Image (cartoon, rainbow, N blue to C red):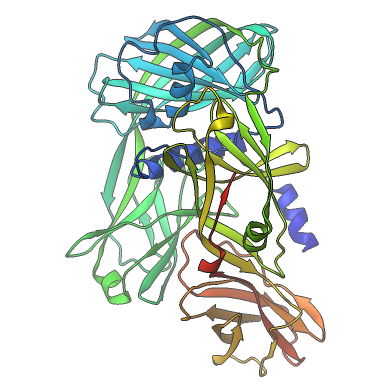
Length: 537
């Protein structure tokens, strides 16, 4: 384990701010079709830390926001627009033109941690033929000359026929009045490409694509389990690509087209190691046609768009609304969660919580988090933010469906559903294995009312343990544990994709096969409807 920690420290780390921006965009795309009861909002995938639980009112008297109707919800900016329309933040009508493109700064809202800007662009050419948009370089400079990174994304709004976007940067305004200079350079337009691949789809194949962005694909492995085909492959890419072009395989059968979520796994070289799990049998895979899909840069508009603006944050030290929460014993017993505080910021509703569960007793994860607020039910999600260096705060986060002048009178109810319990208990649930050999051997355990089946065998110098269960409600084994002469041993750390295939495969190297070997299911998950809970806040 120490060798692994040292290796992680030596491995170059990704730009996590950029990664979170990408996650936020993807999370928004997946929420587009989400609707809940009478009124709707969308959860943000990225945490807005609340080490400072203050709102920032940028005071300017301007009529109702935006003379042209813009669907800010389309790109996840609905909460920013709501705040601006309710007098929170500052609205602008600033334009900057370059290379035939006019960029507009529509508004800015801060919450003590992030400054979010609404941007729109007017162009003279047809945008509908493109599938992605981005400005290449974005910087914010404060009046003292310091520069900050700005992250954001753009999308096409057919209602206004504009490109619209949400850009964000750290909030350095706080309770002061400052002058800022925001600059964006080079507008990039992207489109989808799909190439048919001439290959028999077997491990070891190298396919030349003929495109400079991703010149080749090497099939690393193809495995079939439970009528699923798991394929891992390497895509040649530049070191700075990081999968930005969303390279992935699409499978076409005689009847339909199959897509599967691509997971980029850790790789020892610059190539992208990708895993996809297709719901198809071995025979279907053999007869299928594979296509390679990715996003390419279709057009680049060289230009610079710059805005100089003043922001007034004199009320940044006024808390908008906070309230301490009480935790009822029944809620705490079911969820292993203690409610700490309700925080309303200009951009969201946050419920600060403290987790009290343990792997031994079971940590509860809720796939559905809802908030009944006023006459609406909105959907949010769990997040984690760094409150202080090395100190993290758990929270459940929602975007407010509307704005209330007096939040203290608004009835709220937290609804947590679709509970999944994660456990690991090595004080029990052990079974002794027969001496492992090359031929597969089988055993099983009953754990928490679920039957878990194990297959174990040797492969070269490694001991392989496969785990699966057909018990309804069981969500799978994440990582088994061995005990050899009383000493616990965990398997090698191997990358695993986002999509579960129902079978967990662990590899143990250097195991003394002549010793007494005991097996424990290690970390496993199961659903528990009895954990679903509701509580008035």
